[in-house]
Length: 161
Image 1 (cartoon, one colour):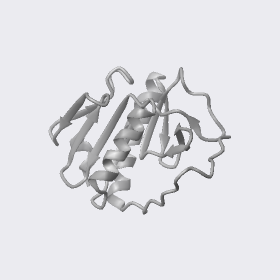
Image 2 (cartoon, one colour):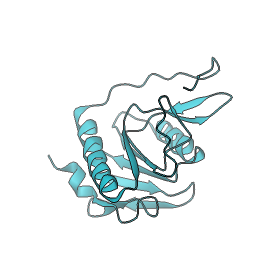
Image 3 (spheres, helix red, strand yellow):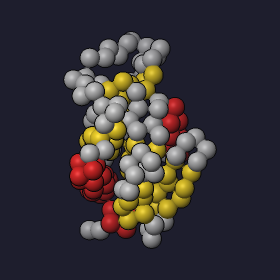
Image 4 (tube, rainbow, N blue to C red):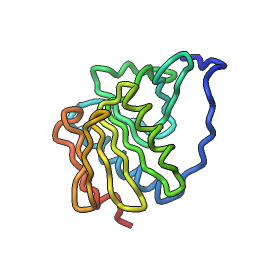
């Protein structure tokens, strides 16, 4: 199990609202079903800790995360390194600085694809690297490229009541 040192900065995050939770759950369930059917890897729920760096230690959790089977070591504690794919639902109360910090932390911590879903605008941004960005509107679909080949999810499906 990983040890978080005294140098680590602890941030308390507010609880998310019901809409945020419903969108994250839909995305995670869809991803998990596809990954299980195709044997691609493991989909992880919010609350799973990923160690993205040391000195000071940097620990994050995502709304939904996915680790390819060749990297999954079934840790009892926190996963060392970033997941291959992260889905973050951006809440209305998050600031641009909060979102920028997430982008930087995940992509600097070995995450290959970061999907940010904006609840307010019903859009998404897919970061394939620090420079590769795709903007998706409500008529488009999310995908995970070569991380989970063939997986797509119409963005509209996440906003169904």
